[in-house]
Length: 347
Ligand code: PHE
Picture 1 (cartoon, rainbow, N blue to C red):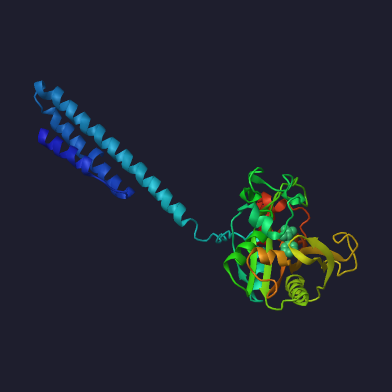
Picture 2 (picture 1 turned 135 degrees about the vertical axis):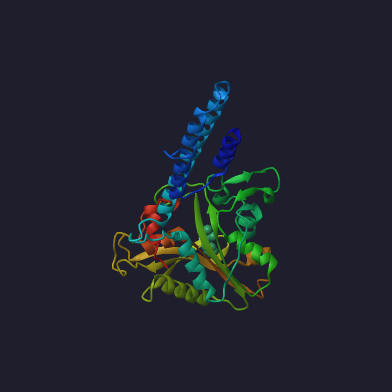
């Protein structure tokens, strides 16, 4: 009898199934009315009295083991079935659409600006965000006392005012620094656009932020004239704002260009008639530009007698605001998905 019990114990331990019907069959075989356990109980009656205690304990052990094993297997089978059901689910249920991400409006507009200029033969240049005074200011003909060098506008990382100014380490305030780096390493003809993040110490408001994005451009070759500049910008404006866009140039000042101009594009919301976006003028300012100052060419080792060029620079946020009618610049930085989703289908 002991042998029989041990054999059954081993059988219970070894039994494994995920199939509820199989588990039930096994339960009936062991624990059922006409099962093995009841048969043992019958035999137990004939066990000599002095062995009853030991044998009874064994039978009880077997019973507990069988009950536990079967309960565990049943629970596992049920959980498995639930998993399978949730995997397959209701086959008649309508499919759920995949949520696709969207590009950030600033990336969309930056890419579009770069695409337009690449069609004119420009390549894309990159440079570091942490810069030195030379590449951001000195080489670009900024006089020593220029207010843009002031702590108010520039985030200085290391200010070594006792040393020659070139040693200052700062966050670039414009991507013109990339143009300087390009001129250092490349000989004309040069035709590059320089997209990137720039940093200025400004109070954050609906129209200003301490971080924003620029795309600047540089074209240097023999015989480049202001007419080339104007035509390139007009082409850009029409590609960006539509065939009917026109531009006007207002004289301006930048240390690194001479002559310099500010470019306005005809307001694409009112068609130039005047509205609250263009403040009734019919024009929207989009960029600064000008002919590269001979001093800047010289600083990068390019002979201004032989070569001339133009440069331009625009704020990506500003162009995106005009293109999409966004009134508050801070929306670009908050990453509210309700705002970002609106650009799902853009481009
Ligand atoms: N660097 C200027 C700025 O940050 C823009 C500019 C670039 C103007 C090139 C003229 C020529 O505002």
